[in-house]
Image (cartoon, rainbow, N blue to C red; front, side, top):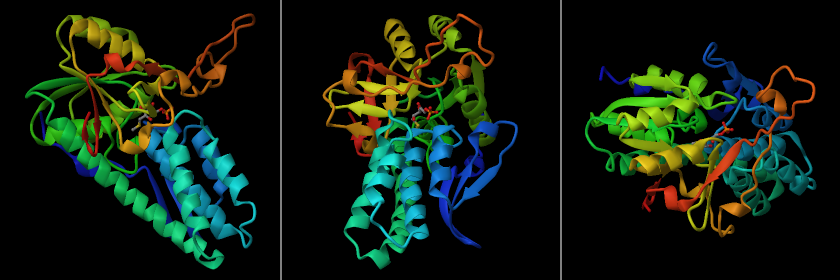
Length: 329
Ligand code: MRU
């Protein structure tokens, strides 16, 4: 492996004090890999729109965006009467990743426990703390996960659970970066991740920028790669983990888990503890987002219906371990 360039990893979302007040800055990920463009807004509704349209995506990043949206709202109003309705709208921008509700709930708890005039500043400080916590958690996940990987490891990943899906560093790719720093990573195979292409557009771009050897594959190539003995471990992120360990992640994760099981390859889920939803006993209760047919079929064909769930649920029995900042389960 050549030299690592982790300093090239981007911060994907951030609340900052701009020239016109507090604003949310984010990489518009719809434009990657062609353009690395930052967008900025002080309108909480635009943050909600960015989450819905996948300009900002990835469970930890949308958790931060949720808290930041409530902070922007607090900076733009003099009456906090409507806070519950605004919080509800933000939290329901996307249904599957529990981190969004978690981020909004944290902001709501701070707002409700403070005097009205203090709320805007306290929410700004909360989001800055959450950003720092996110990076610290990801680095801890990385260290815990790297310990599980062998020397010369060839990793397969699905979707993007990297710096682009978090504040910084990533979860599944955080494990890759930590292992790469220990000289353990030979190569990462990135599933393209149809229909939106998070693997092709984001993971491949991010890993190559960081100096990690990466090979892009179509989703239907994982089985043949595993059969040839070219994959030592699968590492993916998560959007919601039920109390029994069943895990919702990007559509296609389940099939990769079944393939890994069949080929005797360890299948790891890397996620912060904020992704664990103990209120849900198993994966059957995880709400699965259905997205627009045009993501699958940009030009509709008359008479053809499209099925486009954004996530699937991998049963816990296919998961070798869940890697969190608190340890490996
Ligand atoms: O629809 P997306 O791009 O938001 O889906 C993202 C994923 O499924 C990620 O794997 C998951 O959120 C973990 S990100 C650290």
